[in-house]
Length: 296
Image (cartoon, rainbow, N blue to C red; front, top):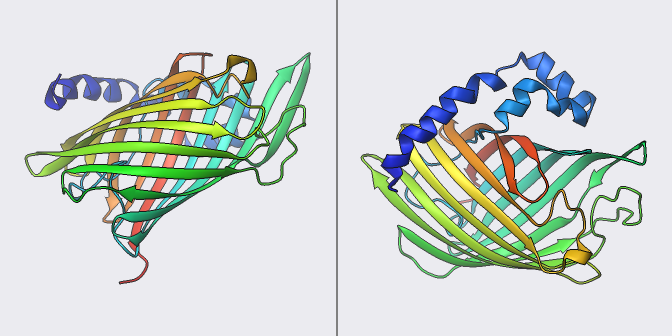
């Protein structure tokens, strides 16, 4: 199915559910920060079935997972997201940075902080803190302005949390990920969209299951500053008896996006997702994206 053919369907979904997230601002933040279980509020739950997100489809063709930031340029992403899966709930605040060391070489840093809770044996367990920190490099293999092929390596480092806690923040072992992203941009009139596929293998150096990860994305421009997007995020554990936490591993997420630009270099997004394989789960997401030149 062509991008233009799916556009009416994605538009109908966005218009159908977008009002569900328009809660009064004070009420929304009271629900979110008072307790993770507040994320089950009817409006937020409905919104999580639709996913709204914002990004840079209005920019040049060079966008998407396989492309790199030019030398001296920075892409910064501050994200707020949630997860509700059975008795398990999570709120996550994450900072993400890509920095152009060279035109084809980017430094990647990801720093997430979690608030989690889970009801077990009639007792509510809670924990919070930094989870595994990620640092790595992406190297673009070609120079085609419309097609980008890259290789990416990440190192995952536990920042010192207690892996033996009744509700641990992470696996407690060092990990590494190798990823191959391929992105193709296209033009519709004066606007740009893109499609991307990625394959990754995540290795943990300890008693934790390795993972195979697959990711696919299609972004369709609607009008200037506005686009619609569909993503599939698949994670498959190699050893089911060594799963860390079933609510966050060995699953597939279906995500839909609406993207809009606020000003030339800044965008804001609100979104959500649903698990279509593995443990049931839904979540909402808010993102603030900023792109700037650090030095000439």
